[in-house]
Image (tube, rainbow, N blue to C red; front, side, top):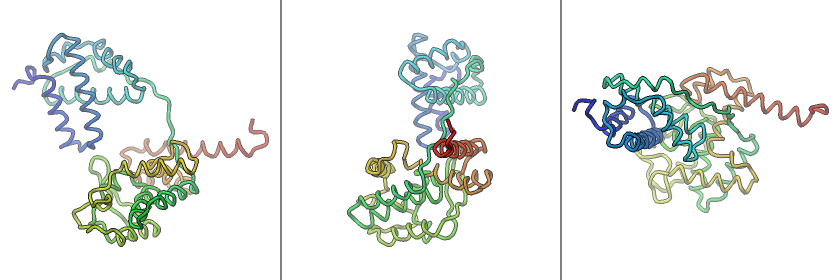
Length: 307
């Protein structure tokens, strides 16, 4: 079918397939892109009075695109979510121009909304250890306690994302001094492992009643299927309530803690970037602001003339 005559929904489907096959975007990102672009297709259908085809993209004005974003804002989306919507939209329109010859010049006039800079909120070393211990103590079976502690120690002691920990297979056993981790966009990085982390995973593997084959998931649910990351988040939520920690004390906050604690101990930013699997150094540099903010908090608390 000629792209100009192809329904916009078909173009969106092919764009998402490209993102999955070539750009290796995560399933979460693909769902978010798909939802945004489906909403855009629906908006244009109502705005233009009927089903939209690719050729109509060229006739869109900046006001049309701003109207879509304004609608999304009216639905209660924050500036960060609007920025993600715009990123999905720009990515789709750039692909349509490059691959299908369907230009939408109006998109160049659309700027993302300004967002307040939000710093990661790590937990202290004592609170991190308390979370790990309490999550383990909450389980009534030894292998489940060992499993949950191993997962959280991979986040806190090796800086893994929770999705990266869930994606590990039995092929990583037995663990050595370094672990190969596949992160975003299927990029692999090498992460050194502390003895405590290796021991925690080894304890779990020894106690686990299910066969941890090379091709199967390393971390298992009660019935032997893949462990759901949501179960880990719920366990941390219960533990932080018991410890009186804020809502920001999430599994991902343990990864933030890994980064800020290394930085506080003199880690080089480039090294930290590699350990975290960040695509750009700017993503890593935000931790320097976190470290400075923590020092300022200490000064304000301790200095007699801080006010």
